[in-house]
Image 1 (tube, helix red, strand yellow):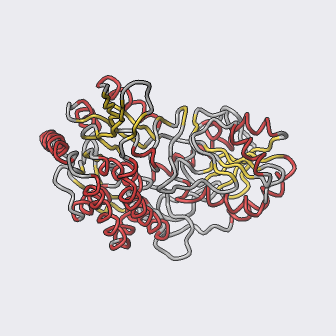
Image 2: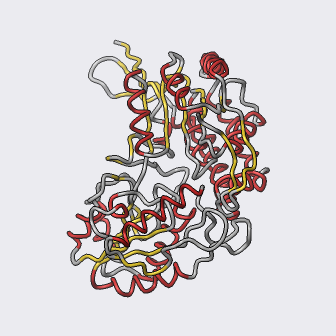
Image 3: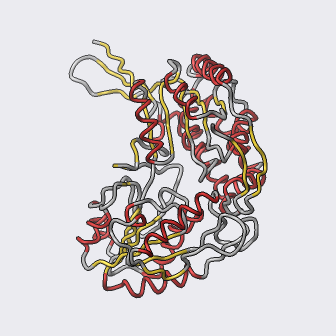
Length: 455
C-alpha cells in the first residue's frame, strides 16, 4: 500500500505520516473537478490568468517556508530550494502574462470560405509528479493548464506529501475556486481509477520510464491524452576547441546540481582526445572540492540523496562499474555519517553492458568517455535508449550546432549547461517520453483545436 510520509534524508528520521485517500474521497474529488471544469472553462482568460499572478506573489512571499519543506522532504540544499521556489513564481507569472496570446484564435488562409482555429480546454487532468523538484514539477504542469481552463487533480510522490499540501494551500489562498486544483494522496490503483473516469481527459506524468509505460498503457486503453516526461542519460560533448574553463564549470553544475537528481543532468561526458586529459584534470579537481553535508548549512554544495534506497541504488551502480574495470578518479563511496549521502564521483573506463553505461544514474556520479573523432562522439552520445537533453561545448559555434543537429534528443544547449526557463520548451524523444512542457508548447498539449468554418 502507498504510504505518504516525510522522512528527512539527511538524518533518516521519520517526520510525519499522512493519510492515504479513500476511494470515496477520490471519487468525490474527480466529480468536483469535472463540475468545476464546466464553469472554469467559461471564465475569461484574463480572469484565469489573474489567479496565476496571485499564486506567483504567494510563492515570493512565502519562499523561505516553502524552501524549508523541500529541503526537509528530499534533501535539496537551502540555496537550491529557494531557487526552485523562485522558478515557480516565474512560471506562474509567465503564463499569467502570456495566456491570452497563446490561446488567441488563429484565422486560416483557406481556398473557400473562412476558417478559424479556436484553442479550448478539454477537461479535468491528472498530474502524477516526482519528488526531485516537488514544486517546480507541479508548476510547469498546473500553471498552463489552469490558465487554459482545464482543472487539475494532482497526485504527488509519496515522499513529498508536505509539499503537495503546501502547493494546494497556496493555490487556494490565491483564490482558485473549489475543484480547479485538488491534491490527492492517492494510491497507484486509485490513479488507474482516476484516468478511467469519464470526466478526466488527460494525464501528465513526470517520473521513471517504468511508471511512464504503466500510465501510458492505462491511458491508451481509456483513450486519454498523455504527456510523459521520463528519464535521461544526457551526453555532454567537449570538442577540441572548447573553452575548457567554461566547460568544466558547466560540467560540474550540470552533473552535480540537485545532488545529480535531475532527468536533464549531464551524465555522460564525451571528450575528444585532444582535450581529454586537460578536461578530466580540471573536472576531477573541481568535483573533489565540492562540500557534502547538512543541506541547511551555508556553503554546502551537495546534500543527501532523496532516500536511503536511492543512495544504495547509486552506490550499487558505481560498484558494478568498478567490478567490470572502471576507474574511480574521485569519490566512489559514501561518507561516514548518517543519512542518504553519496560522494561526488567521477568514473572513467565504464564498459558497455554495465549498469553505469546503460542505466540512468540519478545521483552525483559522472561517467567520462574518451573518443577520437566527432563521429565517434555522436555515435556514443546516441547509444542510449533515452533522448532528453544534451550539451555541446566548442568555440566554433557553427561546428557545435552541426554536432547538435546530429543528436537524437529533444533539447541541446551549446556552450552552456542544460537549464530550465519558463519560456523554453522542455521534453524528449525515445524512452525519455512524449510531449512538451513550458513555453508556448506547454499550453499546446491538453487542448482542443476546434475548427470554426463558414462558407
